[in-house]
Image (cartoon, rainbow, N blue to C red; front, side, top):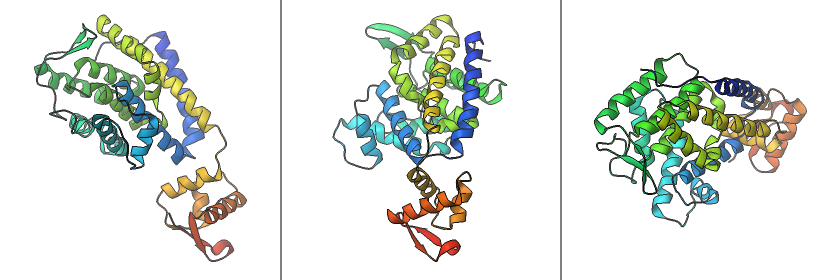
Length: 318
């Protein structure tokens, strides 16, 4: 059964705005992606998503863990970050339309943190705000069937992906399929659903905006619980995505430096290459710019080279 929600004028307006910005982001950014932005987004995503769940590590500490450096902090918080790093490093391993993949991701995200990671809960659960019960989740015996229906909805329903991703996020939070880790799984899975159609979402840390508007996030969930439909949450999430795209376009419209291009080229896995190979990646730069880039790469020790002029072959050293 299709989960209940309405397509409001506000939703239509936001979808139109987001669609236009996604097109602009694809045109302006994906043709010249930056490893720095990809890395920065991963850091912000992991830090923000776990901060919402009470993790105390700073963004600098998350960065240090990504760089395999030692960090002093609560063992649980460090393990949460290390698990999240593994998951976000391997996003391509997960199928957003597969419940088995969903359970696999939960296991990787929560391993060592709870007793039965990757397994749907087997007992009832309530969500508390202070001493007040804010939400009573469906009975445990209903969880497998509810999640099966939810995956069927996102796989077969002819609805906009951007809408389905929001609906999945809300409905999963309502079902509360795990004893712990539901919030971070909802945000992770919405990202995966969006990534399946829009690759640009790899560079969109909307979790950081959720973290900044955390009270609104929880209030929208609560209002939807009371209303019995996800409309208000869809509106909230679309606003977050729209603002995140504004931020991304602010980055992608800047002038990319030679270092941006060199680092991205190295990230593609080239070992030996010519200037022509380099220009095949950056089709919008001139021959002179490519030559200056490669000269800079040699000067700072990224490449070695042999040969002269058009016959020069470069070799990645780092």
